[in-house]
Length: 386
Image (cartoon, rainbow, N blue to C red; front, top):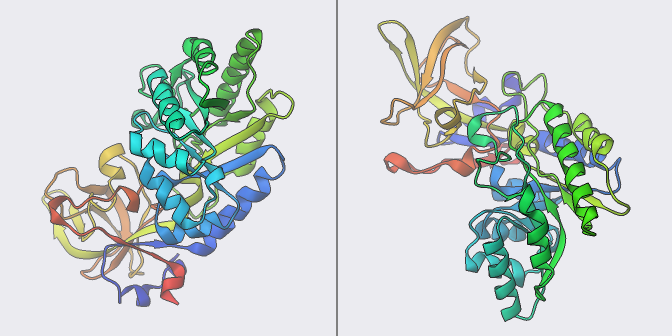
């Protein structure tokens, strides 16, 4: 495992920092191209919210993926990284006027609209500049996914999307707006999904909805199924590249499409999670009353997932080959929730050891904060250490 990391070279860099293995990233992107390419009507957009490191974005933009954005800032980042504007889709329940204008000005592929109120604002802003905005309607399919409650998005109780029963009236309303063109339907049921049965259930719900719309003589050119494919956090080395083959095959098998319909995917975590690690340095080994603590210089400000989702990441001491001992790995933040893992085995730890927190390429650097007045962690790609 240590061969994956340039331990000696890492010693010259201020910790904590993010390290991205670009060889793995490129291999993952190639696999996505190969597996999605088996189906000519499949199109993949990278979910920028997972990781917007400029060097990482640039590499992804070079592999023929579009971009899935959820803010004006992400649209700017995607454009700067080289993603074509006509490959950008823009979702989000709270798009502000300047963000909508940015999308209109750049002729993005479409807005994924989440309410009638939003539709009317987009129509008004597009009309002001004499343009027609392309929209897809995000439908809330009321499907529960086998994942953490905080990252489900397809239940009726969630804030996302338009209820299925409201779909026909919304589309009929959109047809009356000269500055709007309806181009598709959009869905997303959650994140870190490993059960293909959840995606099959979404396909069945989309099939039902398409049949309902057909009864009202409503047909769309594009079906956007969102993303959600998960990764192996427990054993990243066993599955460095997610099961894209089964993922795309599930949709190819179960989604009943009309002639010429195109299918769009919004993959984020599955693209970048495994190529990224948070590298942190061990400050102290503290012997507590009932346990011993490995106190590192990274905290929940650098990687919030364990505190926010109780997420588990594989953690390794990449400086030590000594027999393993049991530790709670904790950070320096003045919060009791600043814990990366409890009662895990690490090679015997010493002050100054480098610790790698694996599978941190998604929702790691991008979610970092400066709480406790801490500096944001820097991100480096493997080429930076040659």
